[in-house]
Length: 288
Length: 229
Image (cartoon, each protein chain N blue to C red):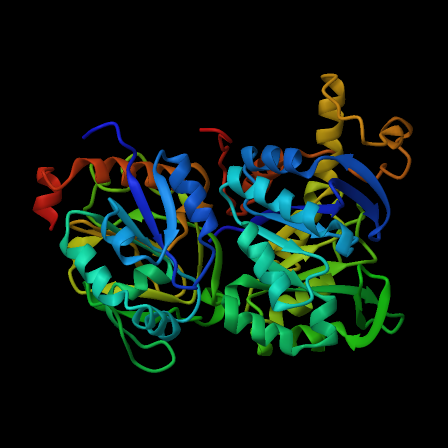
């Protein structure tokens, strides 16, 4: 069994965006294009997270899913703003393989059970967005880390398992987008207690951060974003092959990116393999 | 074999994501339809039985849609029948998933739950992710529906159960997880099945779809197929 590396693509309307602590979103470009590149570079799975999740953006998300699903042949998980069984059905019909639930599941935990019964447990990923408390505990947040719930993240994780979650996506809001490394303690605590796979998310700035959350955090899968995205943007910029929508001023100023070490997926996987981690070493051909 | 595209019918019985299966069929040059229409299923060159979810619910859905006899007819015909994930498990005689359930009984054998194991060998169930697929002992993939796939290649799995065919000769590949090495794909005459999701397993998975398209065009005149059947 290999450890999965999952590029996380945060989506706002038609665009791929990236923030820090899930805020201050910068537009990077068209998500389908990043998705195709990551597929070709050997991504094990893709995660699309609709970070605004407005009703207005729904149709554009469905279109993005449909276009992506037709040309990448790896699993695609979609989250953000899914409130009902009908919402879930719509993204699955568009070509998603799994859905990630957070806000709606916290407001009405029975949604997890209903969705697992209807679509199969393995289709339901419960997303836990956690912020560390001063006392060392963790609190679950909703709405992309904006709303506190008073729920203990660890208790909520185990409850989600009982209700039928197939996987847990555990995001440290404290670390997200910072490039300062994963919250290894948070990941380990949940991964050791949960009988289902745990995907660690938030904080990858260098390859050794990924190694740490696999070895010490016992993550079954790892989400990465900044270390891939900015490299792609720079590579396309270099070839003059750039989309007009993106505000790329930050790339020139390098503001806020000093902790991010550009690491293309094949390099990351080769390095992990050299450290003794079993991960899939494949390149794909998008139109092969 | 003529120039008309191979017609694939993806059985729609309300279980699982069928769209990725359809995309993969089309990428392999087949004309794919998601359907539960009996004449359409019986007229196809390839019938794909996908599925995600519980064994009992799936058999119930097949019975409700009156598709059990249709699948048996497909299995007795020259068409290829391809079971994927839960669809593979449904081909077996019976399953012990949440009580005892009868399957389609097209492949003699049963369905068992993955064991979590203990200590350092402990694993998570369901298995979710990419795992290595190896030729069954003494078996070559040359000429089989895994032709062209490098031994040990990774495929994407999502499951808590696995199949145990009685005839060892039908097992094309094994994969190790939890309960030792178990059957991850099989081939018995015109019936093909895999526990992994080839439509979500990158280029090696697409190779399987291309092999299916090729085998569908070959009819039953291929001696190696007869020898196995």
